[in-house]
Length: 59
Length: 289
Image 1 (cartoon, rainbow over the protein chains, first blue to last red):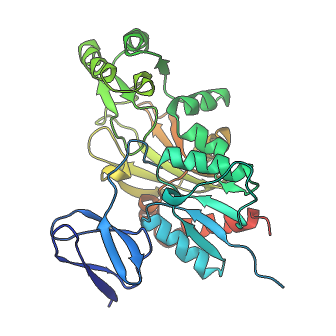
Image 2 (image 1 turned 180 degrees about the vertical axis):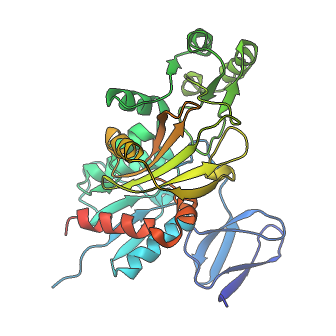
Image 3 (image 1 turned 180 degrees about the horizontal axis):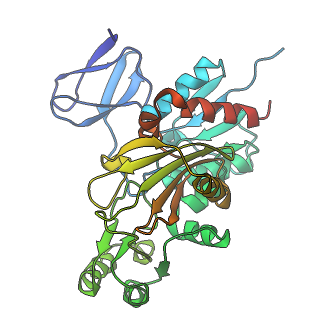
């Protein structure tokens, strides 16, 4: 069993399951509205909409 | 004895690859800190930051490149070096580096205006492909089956804002997606080939970001040598080398990624190789104490 922590999607207010110890700037997807969410703080967990993909993003 | 200074990992977006790297650093007891480039700034000539070395995992090319230049100028070793980020982040610079190293690469041209693009394509021939100079994941890569389509696409390119967008990078379309041949991703760390995966996607773009699946293969000696040489050609210690096999079985280097995503490769490799662990070992071995 994987431990999780829960927060709330700032877009649709649905609960979002996160890893037990999310990392700062980690990206999660809301299972309900499918927006990408970024972890802004870990204690307490605070989520915000993740930045849109920029033209020069890549590997 | 004082503790070693931390290694900084530059990352504004923590994906599965970054989490693997963080885990690998922690598993080795290496002091490290995450540095979000969105908040990074530096005065020219500032004292050296308190980092032993920097692992550059910034997703944005502009931020990655300027961060690398800046930190190197302040005396901190950066992996990859700014020279690699500069070349790998620009498809034309990569083409030139691969050609200068004598490595096989598709026939490619750079036109300095969209109008000149048609002339370049007339010489390259059709089908061809036009790619943005900067960017990954196959984004905006457009096949050009004939002159009529090319003229329309180039008209759209001419309407884009900014002079950089008007530089037109065109390349022969190496093979039809239904023709025999393979798309390959080789991972090279510190001049050593960690492995090669074959990628099969839908359509003509075999990017993992577009849903392609990876399978680890046993590389022929020629392929292994080519991948390592391609990484060296762009001065990349860490490299995701993309290769393509044409319908005749000839291997060509398409491009080299300096801040490689390795989730697809790792999925294909399973537990036979741990890319994050190898990157961290290389980083720590090369970092000044």
